[in-house]
Each structure stands twice: as C-alpha cells, then as structure tokens.
Length: 249
Ligand SMILES: NC(=O)c1ccc[n+]([C@@H]2O[C@H](COP(=O)([O-])OP(=O)(O)OC[C@H]3O[C@@H](n4cnc5c(N)ncnc54)[C@H](O)[C@@H]3O)[C@@H](O)[C@H]2O)c1
Image 1 (cartoon, protein in one colour):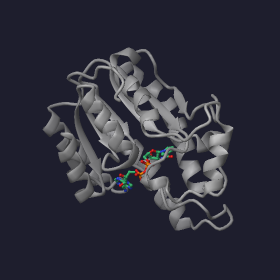
Image 2 (cartoon, rainbow, N blue to C red):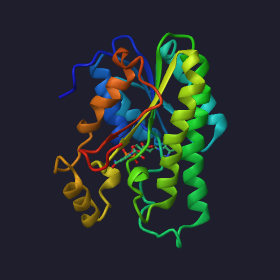
Image 3 (tube, rainbow, N blue to C red):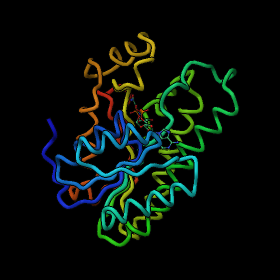
C-alpha cells in the first residue's frame, strides 16, 4: 500500500527505474501524484514497465557522459521541467563474491563509472532544471553495505561510500540554489537483483535487525517519497539508513 505522501504536480526523473527498487519508487511516486520519467539501460524492460505504470521512458547508459546529458534533455522535454531526481541506477548485481584480493580492476572501474561518476553527471545535468523551481530535490541511492563494511563487495561498497560523501558535498553546493540533496542507505532488500545473495548473508541481515524480518521494496519507498516531498524541504545532506535497524547512523 503506497504511503499517503503527496507528490502532486511534481516532475521527477528516476534512473534505474526499469526494475527492482527504482521501479517500486516510480510506481509509488505515481500513486502519490507525480509525473515520472524512468531512465535505464534496459530499454525493452524499461519501456514495458513505464507503459504499465503510466510513466515515460528514456534510455540511458550511465557510463556514457553524452548519453546522460541527452537523457536529461529528453526527460525535461517530456515533463516540461524537473522538480526531482532519484539517482537509483547502478551496477548492483553480479559483483559480490570475490574478495578485495580477487576483484578485477575492470570491474572496479566499471562500477565507479556507472555508480559514482554516473550519479555525479546525472545530477550535474539536472541541476540547471532543478534550479528553476523552488525546493527541488535530489535523492541518491547509497547502501548500508557502505556503513557496516560488507566484505567481498569491495567496488560496490566503495561506490556507495562515495555516494554518501558526494551527497553531503552536493548538499552544501546546491543548498543556495534551492536544491536539497539526501541519500538513502537501504539494507538488503528482496528484489530480482538480490536473488543470488547467499542464504547466510540474508540471514545475517535478518538476525542483525531490530525488526527481524526480510526487507521488501515497500519498506524503502515511503522514505523516498518523503525525501521528494515538500515535507522534507529543510532536510539536506543526510543519509537515512533504511534497514530495520541493522546499522544505525
Ligand atoms: N536491493 C538491495 O538490497 C539494495 C540495497 C541497497 C542499495 N540498493 C541500491 O538500490 C538501487 C537499485 O538496486 P536494485 O537492487 O533494485 O537492483 P537492480 O539491478 O534491479 O537495479 C539497478 C538498475 O540500474 C540499471 N542500470 C545498471 N547499469 C546501468 C547503466 N550503465 N545505465 C543505466 N542504468 C543502469 C539496471 O538496469 C537496473 O534497472 C541501486 O542503486 C542499488 O545499489 C539496493
């Protein structure tokens, strides 16, 4: 059930919206009254998801700076402006397992290009449009793996730590422009991308939580809606861990 937060008349771009958490954020934001463009590298899946939920779709590869600029231009054209950006797109699957001693440099570089540089460049391209409105919002998606130091996930953990730091820095630079920047740090959430996570890691999460159960996408959407809403106008530079109390800020 979507929480009762109003995003009425908000125009929001959500990267990584083709599936998983991003898709859930887009559906919840639409239910809260927002107009949504989802942007993703998965063009067919993304187009279908967008059509089903009543969003618009733009293809983008977050590893490619030019593609990011084009994506924001197209999204702004479709929406007629921009009030919010959710940087959710990331390499979030298929990279766990190898230790820091075994991780390939190519994997590290790719994860940094998409997750970190992609988030920076997407925000950079969106800022001139977000500045045009009062109290615009950027919500970056980090991960609580960066807070507790999850092992055997070195490039991903490093990328999500960078997201937390970047959020703080961006908040100070963009506050004077009327843009609030926050990030969320979800715990292990059950989506297609986390199906491969070994049972012992899943159990470690459940047992370590204050609220001892599996985490579902609906557990995360309410906080994202809040951060995009007028209720969060004076909240910026913060990282909100959403993980049932597994790790606390
Ligand atoms: N599911 C979890 O347990 C969890 C926990 C903490 C944080 N997160 C974060 O939540 C976000 C969504 O993750 P998810 O679990 O739903 O996984 P996911 O793989 O389903 O979502 C990632 C999305 O980003 C897109 N993407 C990947 N590379 C891209 C690129 N180069 N250009 C454009 N789009 C690209 C994918 O196609 C996908 O739609 C990610 O930022 C992830 O790091 C997830």
